[in-house]
Amino acid sequence: MLVPLLFLFFPLLSASKLCHPDDQSALLSFKDSFSNPNPFPSWDVQFDCCNWYGVECNETTNYVIGLNIISNDLNGTIPPSLAKLKHLQHLRLHKIPNLIGEIPQEIGELSHLTYLVISWTNISGHIPHFLANLKTLAYLDLSFNRLSGPLPPSLATLPYLYAIDLSRNQLTGSIPESFGHFPQNPALDLSHNMLFGEIPVSLANVNFSQVDISRNNLSGDASVFFGKGKITNTIVISRNNLEFDFSKVSFMESLDVLDISHNKIYGSIPTQIIEAVYLQFLNVSYNRLCGKIPTGWKLRYRSESWDNSSFIHNRCLCGIPLDHPCE
Ligand SMILES: *[C@@H]1O[C@H](CO)[C@@H](O)[C@H](O)[C@H]1NC(C)=O
Ligand SMILES: *[C@@H]1O[C@H](CO)[C@@H](O)[C@H](O)[C@H]1NC(C)=O
Ligand SMILES: *[C@@H]1O[C@H](CO)[C@@H](O)[C@H](O)[C@H]1NC(C)=O
Ligand SMILES: *[C@@H]1O[C@H](CO)[C@@H](O)[C@H](O)[C@H]1NC(C)=O
Ligand SMILES: *[C@@H]1O[C@H](CO)[C@@H](O)[C@H](O)[C@H]1NC(C)=O
Ligand SMILES: *[C@@H]1O[C@H](CO)[C@@H](O)[C@H](O)[C@H]1NC(C)=O
Ligand SMILES: *[C@@H]1O[C@H](CO)[C@@H](O)[C@H](O)[C@H]1NC(C)=O
Image 1 (tube, rainbow, N blue to C red):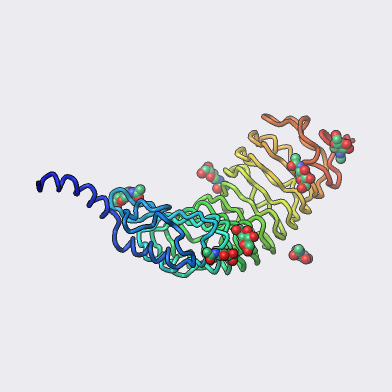
Image 2 (cartoon, rainbow, N blue to C red):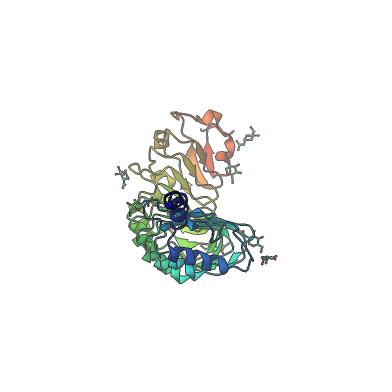
């Protein structure tokens, strides 16, 4: 009788004991911190917490390494008890409209965090300096929130950070000089904020994989993002107050999307732009450009097939696809 019973119960017992008790109690205090009576029905101590909604465990150690919550009706603030999930590597709090308050300091204690997403919520306050304590952080997305205040210069000290999306907040101040010293070639999205001031010259040192600073009030010289040897595929700097000579920029072959519209950019469009053979989207409209629109585009798009809306409202651009012929 004993043997079959063991066979019967051993799998069940072991299954129910995979999750570490410390992790389970940390998850329960996370859940209990919200005002909702029962936000996650699957978070029941009868079940292994590695099988709870949004919870990911390491298959060898069974420590909780991921928490991925999407919820329309979760009300409250980000609980400091999250820091008790000591092995957490991935944290994603996404599309939680009633998530409010600031990013708690305890997030800075999650020393294994590589992936941090808090997006489409109503969290507010500043982007905290203690994010720079997360030395393993590779991916940071704090887009679509109500964050305000300056960009923390210390973010640029993170050795593995390669994706930074802080778009669609209410950030103010200028881009820190330190952002010219990112150790990786990051994708940087600062669009739809209220940033102002000059673009730091130091940014010329960075080989951004993508950069979007559109819809701010930035001024000065954005030629720092260009350069033939770089690997950038997206440069979107539209709707700012940028003022520089476009004639002096050179284009990387990898460029796929270029939008410089609605600035005060002057000079001409360099013919070298045709070396950007992968260019699929171009918009230089609403600037102060002059001279002949280059011809001889190599690949997908020839100026003949372009809508003239990419070039309109400049000082004196001429040639196809605009109506004005060049002299
Ligand atoms: C969550 O907050 C919203 C907006 O404040 C409110 O309408 C709703 O009743 C709250 N729900 C719970 C469960 O507290
Ligand atoms: C799980 O933990 C083991 C042992 O620490 C480690 O070797 C492995 O890379 C981890 N797996 C994941 C997906 O983190
Ligand atoms: C923030 O809350 C308001 C209502 O209080 C809501 O309309 C808005 O969608 C929320 N923002 C996000 C990103 O969920
Ligand atoms: C943008 O910055 C300029 C100065 O560079 C300032 O005159 C203007 O008022 C600012 N616009 C907005 C909308 O903040
Ligand atoms: C950009 O990165 C590419 C690929 O890593 C490298 O070949 C190139 O030299 C870099 N360019 C600059 C200007 O750093
Ligand atoms: C270029 O930008 C202008 C100004 O925002 C816009 O009106 C036009 O439709 C855009 N053209 C293309 C091809 O995106
Ligand atoms: C742009 O194209 C439209 C339609 O083809 C034309 O009516 C308009 O005059 C053109 N505008 C310029 C500035 O070339």
